Structures are given as structure tokens and as C-alpha cells.
Image (cartoon, rainbow, N blue to C red; front, side):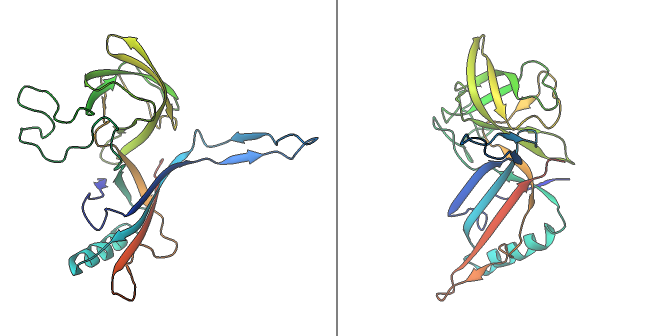
Length: 227
């Protein structure tokens, strides 16, 4: 079962960087022209760097130590993307039963979206069609996740080109490529996207480092668990 990285301290970093990493092959320069370059990884994989994650209390120190032990050996964990959509944002509490909408179904934050896969999308696909059932329109740069199941966790994607086809259906380019196939009607998570990842900790950054003022900070890096 894939657990989720908690959203509270000490996992709320002062610095955060998500990026796609490509495996590339570059050819030699020829007659002063730029070298040829191809990618060999199916569109890259995600890496997330959490810088200066604060651990200010003894309980938070112990939380980091426990995480360092639990995540050893390549254990998967679903890491939250944390960024907010520009027209609204992640809602963590609200006075309604589903915590995302008022009783009449209207979203509390205008940027929230409910969406599903419109037509079958295959393994390694870099294009798909999405049906937005309610909420804000899609935007290039939007990030979403799809649930692969309790053993694999979530896969994360970003939108490139976005084209409205009408009837709430959108044609989109995505990156990276799909990690598996999905059937029509599969739920798409734009509001709280996650990515199944593994801890990469070559310098022991998850163990808190104390400065002269006895203020501890940790550094976390995760790489996508593609398989």
C-alpha cells in the first residue's frame, strides 16, 4: 500500500522545485552546427526537491527520523505537488460535507476542477481527451494525477497545448507519457495531484541539520517511481 507524504510540517518546505528530467543522447558538433539530441526515456521522469524543510519541535525531529527509516530501500510514497492552480487553489477545509463545495454543489474555490478521461488513453500516450464535468476551464501548465492503484500510487502529468473541442471536452498534450492505459470515465485529479516517488537521499538530507541557533532544517529529494 502506497502511503501519502503528509502536508504539514516538517514536510512543508521553504523551497520547492519540481521538474522533468530527461535521459538524452547528444551527437558531436558538425561543421559548427548544434549537435543532434534525442531523448531515450519516454518523455522523462519527475523529480521533486524540498529545500529547507523546517523541523522546529522535538516531535517534528522524530517525524523526520521515522520517515528516514521507513523510506529506506526504495519504498514508494505519494508526494503532493503542492502548487496551486492560478484561478483558485487547493481547499483543505470547508463548511460542507465534501470539503470542496457548498451544499448546492458550487465549488468554494473557483480554480477547482472535476474531470475524467473522455476516451481510452494508451500506455506511453502523450495526447489525450479530457471531459471537464464541473469547475474551471483547463489551462496549459495545469498538473493532474491519475490513481494507478494501491500498490503503485499516483502518476503525475502536466498539460502542454490545450484545445477546447466543445461539450466540455478538451484535447490536450501531456508530459511525461502515460505510465499505463486508462479507460473512459477514469477520474482525473487536478485539485490535489500527487506522484508516486522514492526518496533519493545521497547526503543524508532527510536527517535534520542544526545551525548555531539550534534551528534544524532538512533537505529532501524524490524521484518518480515509474515502475
